[in-house]
Image (cartoon, helix red, strand yellow):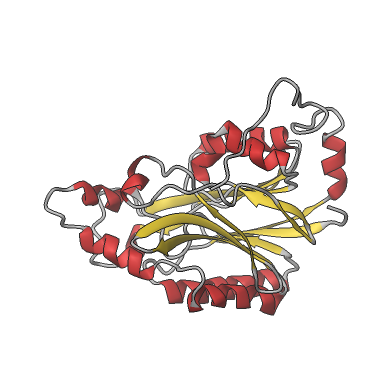
Length: 297
């Protein structure tokens, strides 16, 4: 990073199980954020077209197959890359001169993957990362990722990379980003607990990078009638999005229990100042003793 950068976390609800309408929502939010000066906007984990909460995924384990139609609907509304739908996202990035980072259910053949997609102001896909290990109930929905996007990429804003939800608990996955020079660390998630923020503050301090954690916000009343939900609160995902500085302090958020867009200006001087005493892949690393072996797909 050479210049200050304005970023945004869009804690907004998708049009659940409707890909095209959700992309319309994404475009509206992108326009709003760009009008307020944002240069990069992050959306939550699998914003397109829904995060598969365990309040409906649990039905997939039933022997009678009663909820198979919901999986089929999710697959039908998932994003194929490339496709006309993915081009629409790129077009939104180009129209507003933004970097758009979007969490998506990605359909490839008959398998759905949890993907983080980063589109540049030229409308092109700059980073395509698939979640390495689906967590708990998610394994009934998503296939495991291949690690192809496990790196930070150079942008005009700085080096940008990210991990999805509980991937952020994987030390070697984090170090892969550190080793590739991440400066803006993206952490889209469905984890809406207070404890998640313990991890985000630690990762900001460990990476000495800016961390954007954008969390799922979903309401039970927004789900289609044919999607069975177990009993529970109206808020299926209560958010908790935040933007953190390289010292672990909050620049914006956390935002709980409502929709909203968080904004923060990232000062590049903080990156250098915080790395004076600790640089995980630099002067505080011992590659002669410890090393990460990368196995490319």
